[in-house]
Image (cartoon, rainbow, N blue to C red):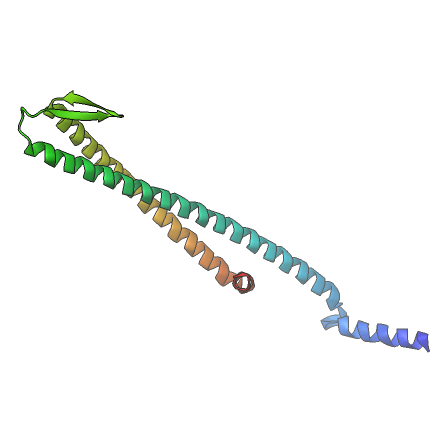
Length: 164
């Protein structure tokens, strides 16, 4: 009786596993599964790379924006200081702050320093603006790569959505 049960099981297993033309589909299933796992692993690796690039680009972009904000403040301070110095007469005593001390400086020297700070800030802002535009282009490229990856592998998209 036991032998009869084993024979019927092996017959049913063989019948279930045989696909078209007598090829065992369990071998094909294993191969497909292995390829699918390899594709899933490649998709995960690509996702992690894209995610790291996005994090890195976002951090750089925030850093550039903070630097721009600081340079804008420096530029505004230099401009306001120049405006105040212009309103003073040429014979007025002007002082430059160095640490906790104040040093007597001619008005012309202070004006030149403030003009130089203003020009330096403007050039730094222009340079940072170019960097910002470049990083924004990189960010859109990374977003497009991520979008493309998720469209190619909907299973990965479901996994990501289930994590959040």
